[in-house]
Length: 453
Ligand SMILES: Nc1ncnc2c1ncn2[C@@H]1O[C@H](COP(=O)(O)OP(=O)(O)OP(=O)(O)O)[C@@H](O)[C@H]1O
Image 1: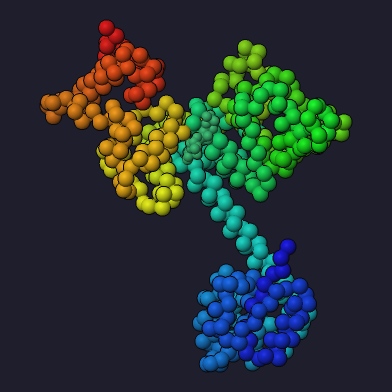
Image 2 (image 1 turned 30 degrees about the vertical axis):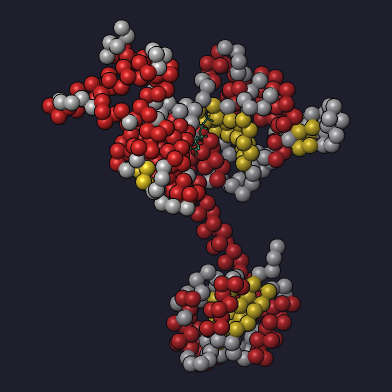
């Protein structure tokens, strides 16, 4: 650990020299300043963890003036150095926020104790505020003000500090990984690793050695010991994404780890102990997979703990503007210019269906932002990537002002669907994609408007 830094502000050169040498001897880094202007110049570069401040400083030698400057030291505790006659002033200083005072001539042992206490308090304060920031940060990444998102936030805050296993379910692209990361960041394991494993992306034959690691000679090519992801996640959180895709033989092995907290590396004989929190995610229906014999029932109950369910964007459309704003800010940071959507473009994003949920919304916005020129994203930009969007205005029913909103919307939908089907030569999957609908959604509308023939 690097030495803690102390800034000593005192105009007596002999005292400064002596105190500096005591403190350095005790392992602190010390810089001295003879007056407040000199001290303020040192602050940004030296970043002291603690300030020792004499009250009578040149040019005024006015303790009240020095006290009025206490506000310059907000990031670190200040210990006041006083003469015996200045006791009341020292008490005033404490009322103004100084941490403690010590009388001159200074007793080095007493000084050491006071400094140690002040520094450990300062460290606790810093850790606490970092933790608070981290916690706010974790939830700030989880955008949405819908009742579903508010309930999700409350649940995350409640269960994050426990070690209970969590299964996050919900449609693809709805934020299951974001939720899992927030659970980790709000947990007591926040400073330990969060290791994410996509169970479906690693070939079945490699999954065991990826998770458990292997020892030298375990198989051809294993020329040295290699730790597995489980070991990398030790003390932290293991996130098993798409757990429904884990092959059955691997499920048996994972079950043993969860039951016993131990495992063997591939080819290894030494039992490894592990302490981790498991969070799993899936968009599959696990009970259904259990019924079909594709997922072990005993493992299902082991990983289930508490189930959190993320909700499709279609069921919380009110989150779309907030999400757009969040992603626009991210894009703006990357592009180094401010970005916004004009009102028609914003409406297009809100009205559209997003079968790929937040992921699709984010990707679409990013592509539009990439092709847009200037800081305002408009329908013209959108139509470069989604030509059917341009036709929208032209397709509005001519006498729409005479109709109810519902009738006008229905007419517009019918026109758009017919147009898309024509363009896609009757291919419904393609037309659904063009319209930003799921195939199922399009079929329902075709049925409702009797457009089948
Ligand atoms: N509530 C949210 N706030 C901010 N970003 C979100 C939110 N939900 C999702 N995202 C973003 O959407 C994208 C997809 O999210 P994520 O990977 O967490 O979804 P998922 O449900 O785990 O998807 P999959 O099932 O396909 O693995 C990510 O870029 C993520 O940052």
